Amino acid sequence: MIPLSGPDITQREKDLVMEVLDSGILGLGPKMKQFEQMMAEYVGVKHAISCNSGTSGLHMLIAAMGIGEGDEVITTSFSFVASANCILFERAVPVFVDIDEKTYNLDVTQIEAKITPKTKAILPVHVFGQPANMDEIRALAKKHNLWVIEDSCEAIGGEWNGERVGGLGDAGVFAFYPNKQMTTGEGGIIVTNNDEIAELCHSIRNQGRGEDGLWLSHVRLGYNFRMDELSAALGVAQLERIDEILAKRDAVAKMYSEKLKDVAEVILPHVEDNVKMSWFVYVIRFAEDVDRDLVMERLSKRGVGCRPYFTPIHLQPFYVERFGYKRGDFPVTERVADKTLAIPFFNNLTEAQVDEVVAAIKEEIANAKEPAAL
Ligand SMILES: *Cc1c(COP(=O)(O)O)cnc(C)c1O
Image (cartoon, rainbow, N blue to C red):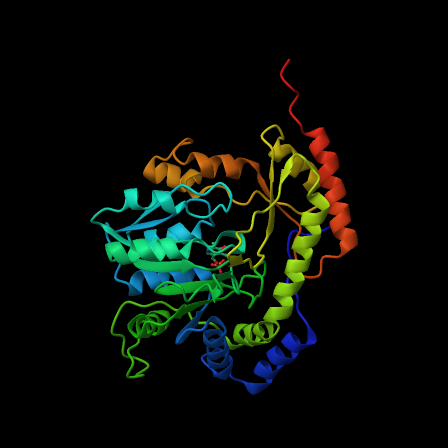
């Protein structure tokens, strides 16, 4: 069995978690503050507000920016469902734009045509850890007076023109579920330079409490989106090791790219010249004549973890039912999504395991090629 993903936990993580347990302070304590400070410094922003998931971080930003009933937010369908759901939570509407065929990120040339008087924000997703074209997105946002929310949940440590993602728009979010580059168990964090947004997010994550600190005074509708101290301790230990973690992932990605480069039926992940990729997953794309689903089924049977990253959001049953989307609405997204596959990828994947995965892929491609037309 070679799993699709897995966390990288050392003695340091265990020690810090034990420290929290021994301290008796399990919520709203010093580890949360420490983790937030470290993260703000790492990303290069004024504020970091931890929370209990990437999804809740995105949700809070939509609420804090005053995006609501009938407002529109431009985003991508080639993502995890939470990046569009966060807009629906506040009764606003996600407006999808098709993707760039090489980077799989928002096709920035198609954004402007989707901007209407109701548009309030652009929400780019740095898909698989590759930063979206933030120059173009910021220029469009400035021109049309829109917020920019970076869904950086897959891209901690990624850089666009030498600048870390998360701090490139008005606010960004990172996520720390165990399959991400670094983990806190469940968890997420908002990063921003905007004082007002930061203050609102502090309040919203803590039941709408005001800044006066009175425990039973609630000045707005809020949630319990707080990060606990055990998660924060994990976050501190993982963030201390982030350079090592990202370097290990980079090395695994390089191994795959080297060993798969001569397989004619596989399109390797493309990385733009002006970005630093933060490898979240390693996603290959099969040629048109390869039946991806068949390869996936056979790899799974052999114990090689794999998953179709992503099924487009607009084709998720709930979105089809609610908005009437159909195949053909976003042709590039669909063409890419039909043939992409995430393969085993984690920090401590060995070269022997990479060889095993590559050999299995080659064999199963041969079994899954559609017969040539007569
Ligand atoms: C993981 C992820 C999220 C949500 O993170 P959770 O912590 O699982 O809520 C949001 N957007 C993208 C693109 C993600 O990959």
